Length: 339
Image 1 (tube, rainbow, N blue to C red):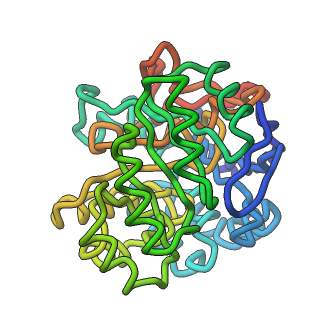
Image 2 (cartoon, rainbow, N blue to C red):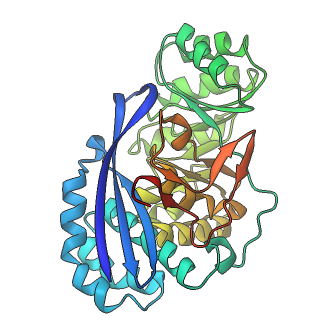
């Protein structure tokens, strides 16, 4: 068994701005886990907002390398349980390792990961394409540069309804709105009424995670469905979100990988919630992992690789308004620069 680490600064097509800040590059870590003739690839982005660096992730994974070596013959789920007590404070590192193990497991069994789970690629959702906060002119320009039937609009300003009204003049595409916890309950209720008439499908994380009273009011009076993002990080959050949201957006990096992510989907279904999986501007390595879950989802935000100037990997790709799976096993990911 061999573990290798590759770090990249993924350059974005456009400066990406949300209510937390702006960036032109997305640092990311690729984990390559080799056993015999097969190599599995995993990925997690390094995100300042969450205090995550590639160096910290590498150090954490190296600490569990003896455990991985000793238990490489097990299933990804069994390995996750063994390594989690040591990586519980670094879910991004756990995610990269877990995805690599899933990819390896599929490859050594000679089957795509989704087929190992008994899933079929039918009635799968199409990803939205994200438009970050910018001047209205530049947001329109980005939409014209990339015509798409489904946009996620990142907002969180005092002019959000006005901005959406202007964007609506230039496209008939469906809008999803992500306020990144920037609104008050009063703003969200008022905005939801106007936004429903503007072809917005749902609101993602309109309020701060600790505004429970606000969420109670919003859930009662919102004209649009509400999807939890920052309020739904780990498995125990799914049940907590059920009284205040209509659905949850699960991020593999935040919840620590495909293993818990799949369990969160199952829990959300039991509670009658809609299910979305989102990305953190990963390359095609991370996006290919998300794609394995598509048959289980109502919505998906897997446009990370689509937002890059150039990709570092091949695998599941999204173009021509369709998801294209490669004829490869595991997640289908292949690191271009080293193969």
